[in-house]
Amino acid sequence: MRMIHTSDWHLGRLFHGIHMTDDQAHVLDQFTDLVRDTRPDVIMVAGDIFDRAVPPTEAVNLLDDVISKILIDYQVPIIMIAGNHDSPDRLGFGYRLMQGKGLHMFGRFNTDLRPIVIHDHHGPVFFHGLPYVEPAVVRDKLKDGGIHGHDDAMGKLLQQLKNKMDSKQRNILLAHAFVAGGEESESERPLSVGGSSVVNSSYFKEFDYVALGHLHRPQKVGNENIRYSGSLMKYSFSEAGHQKHVAVIEMDASGKIGIEPIELRPRRDLRCLEGYLEEILEGPQNGESKEDYLMVTLKDEGALLDPMGKLRKVYPNVLHIERPQMLTGGEQVKLEGNFRKMGEIDLFESFLKQVAGREITETQRKIFGEIVNQHYSMMRGE
Image (tube, rainbow, N blue to C red):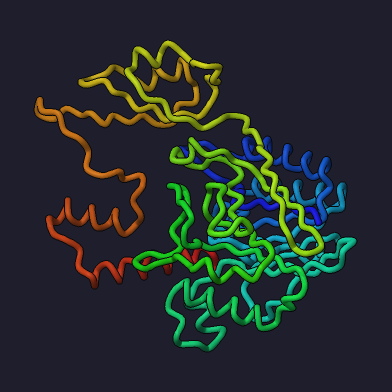
């Protein structure tokens, strides 16, 4: 069986004030061309299809165009699960109309855990889907007071799934989670605030392939067959060094997997430049495009006259400038910490310390974490 694994499209993404929909459409045109050329038996999209629970109209229209082309023009079935950015109800709107064409959706969590069965010339392959779900929802649905965090929830869900699974058949799992050993970037929204969101990779060892979503760097976690495809595009400057691709997977009759990464090229790359202003204004080097999205770190000390205006005359898509060397009162100081890499609770702790001059208490940390988790749950419509 030939499969394509992709995830974290984040359609409708707004990045430094730039709407990314046209850039996403450019990459998805290449994706549909890949589907046309490789003719897979199924496409797996492992969550975070949209960037937020209420996506803009143009993002919904883009998804509709992509799905329609794949299902109707190329007649390739699609299996999708909801991620932590998605609203399961909005993602599933119109699903029943497209189900007969080959769209299979795991949106809102339920305890049925029934797989999708797709056949190749060797026989059936069972596709199991676990959309993102808060541990509190799993605790309520399973009536299990022992579930407190993401690791507990995933362990209990997979145990129920495996109890119904025929281990003699070929089994594929789609899941949206932070699996232990995975490498983060700045653009993943935390799955949990004030507690651990990491789940144990050993839970997945019975599956022939595990198609993961959430982490944006393409990577394996533990075994070769437990993998993140990575995000569709670079969505933060911490991802500037990533090589984005989708995974084309070949599975034989015994469930053995072969993986070929296929790169999708963006209309504009996302890069980081560092140097003195005068040097950077000399223009692109080594064949790089002046149209790329850029973060520029300037090494100059002292005042500079309109550095953004000057840079944009050469690089029109400079989005952010950093000045790590700052002069205050004639003395050189460095900013404490990298605030772009901080989570919500770390930012709140830093804010409280600077404004109130005191450390955060454990009670305040817990209350703040509960408020942020509740906010994200409301955004997802849970």
